[in-house]
Length: 563
Ligand code: SF4
Image (cartoon, rainbow, N blue to C red; front, side, top):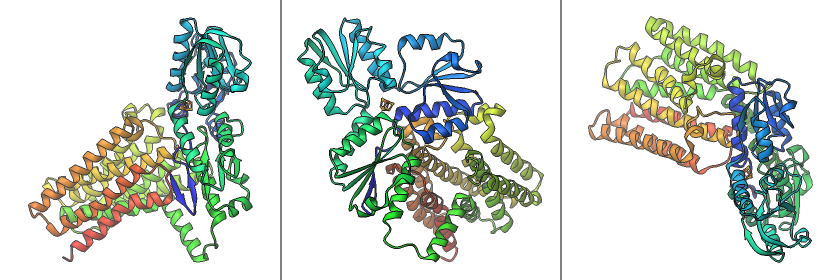
């Protein structure tokens, strides 16, 4: 959880794994050129997300017959559907992708198992909710929905009954209802099917809402789980605000409250939570920023968000590689590294940006930088120039790999590996090649060092992107392999780097430089540990810190020259 100015943002706020998975699925289909994409019912109950999906021509329909283009793909949303409807969907002749959350499937399986043994089913949930309608389909016509113990009190007598829950139900309501159902049955099976992410969210909310003066619940008005979360908070905190976006925040209660707790439903994207949290902090700032610091902040934001900072970071890393390789500092090659990395980073960022988010500026700037990079590489030689152009073309094709059918670039984890190779070419390979050092051990070392460092940078940035629900596919290592394997991979990379630098130091190979790089390595270790324990979303500060490692290494290797 993030805490600042007595404003706490819940760690569990934002998309639950089931929603995140369903959204990733439709975005991957859209990116793979499988259009149009239809979802059976809205994917989630959040206007900001459904607007974003509509802009990508991902639309919601009620039945397969409503699809205007039968060559499209039908996606079953996270809430799931009834088995009867599933059959209808599967036999409609269109490609079908099932994005039912595995935890909803688990609830469906439990109902199915007991229904087959002759049990009646009582579902504790909202009668009209899509998930509950789907669950009812597994009860073999012997299911009933109740919202709580009061409705359960009016139930008839059952011989055998299985009590289950909508996955987002409040736990206390479920158990109170189950106790009531028990009174109406000879045999009562209680199956708590509230999913773990919901339990975690409720637990954290109960703990933190109690000590807050104001709870802000962020999420769609039509989202059942957000409404339930707001209701839960009303019983715990003196004041609760339910807002869809930051524009609905009321200034006075936000200013007056001593402690604010911000939470959100499972269908609220992190970028909406971020904006609400930023607005709350802005309202609570005691004094307006000085003109100078405001101006500096804006300028910094511009440099980072538009990839200029990353370009300088690449030039800084190229300098470190030149020191490792023992080649003279070459201004032309430093400029090449900066322009090359800028061109690729800005082009890919422009491709991901929504219209109006500097898309045109970034595209134009990246093309100019690519031309500049080619100009810098031209004097080096035809081979280096050709390789540079190949890398640039591959980088420019990357956002359109699905359309161009570059399957190789769509393999899991390729994004981070290709980024590392691109940087290694610009920062380490080209300086060694230019100065005839390509076959020296120092050149191998610099390439190895750059690949590992940039791979870690890319994985760490990918991790913060995932927290921000950015549209990243399985090409990102973190998304492809999950948190556990990513941690292992990065730990191994850190150990390999530490071992390599430690061995060089013990061999007294360039001891001043290697010693300084080992000190700089501590910063990298800190960054990695910090970002694996941080669950908030990527900000300018995060990019500053992550790419800042290259400036630290640059400063330390520059210092080593005077030792
Ligand atoms: S709330 Fe739980 S069950 Fe529902 S989609 Fe999210 S993770 Fe799955």
